[in-house]
Image: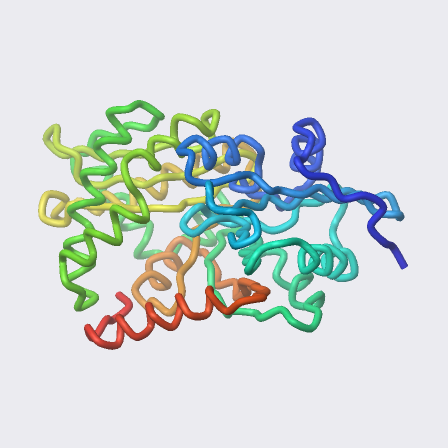
Length: 349
């Protein structure tokens, strides 16, 4: 039975990079470069931990807390909300017993709670590892298998209607840009503000509340950090119609790809199907870069999101987010959000 030989924090950069590079499932949001982007805004502190086990395995857990709160009272997250997926990366495939040892170690650390949103593809290992005292919160993501390359994905995974919409978009006179420039980030943010109004209407949410949540979740400075400070991991794909931005997506890519945000000016985009073309181009780019999967992010219970993602051949991957609480502050926050949504008649669109 293995045990932890050594726990290391802060994590040595060369160890983090080596473990990340050896993990075939690792997502860009688990990389050290993404950690740099996350810390750039000054809102979080790095409390990540590396583990060496007696059987020779080595693992890294990206882990963060808000600053400058006292360490004793701050919760720890892997990763913070709206920063993608976290959880363990491992130079060799992790087993439930290793995950369990890590979770036991985290329980012994200071702080009010620990919350971990692992890579959905690692769900079976985490599910089997759960020790007493940890709570699993059901989640649902969609992942597209890129094995076989773009020709296989196009012919056998894209739905017929998806391919038709991509062809229509190619004939719609759209201009496509992809990159990390300040101009692209700003254009993405402007489209995000327009999308917030549309989502608020669909979700029966006051527009002012939607704008406040949007500013809190994705301020311009945060999007800039994601794109500029991540070493080129995150890129904006932007579609213009008659010179005006009409749709954009944010994709994080290394040896895996992760579509994390999509925005659109529905009125300006019209029937161009710009969102289909952007996804197609990002998926094609991921295939050409040798990525094994194209993660399409959290779907939750949204039928419309699930339908859109499934048209590209992405399959639902049920997984769980895990938390341990000494003081139920995280549960209280979830309860408050639930009560507010119920009071305003919020509908998940």
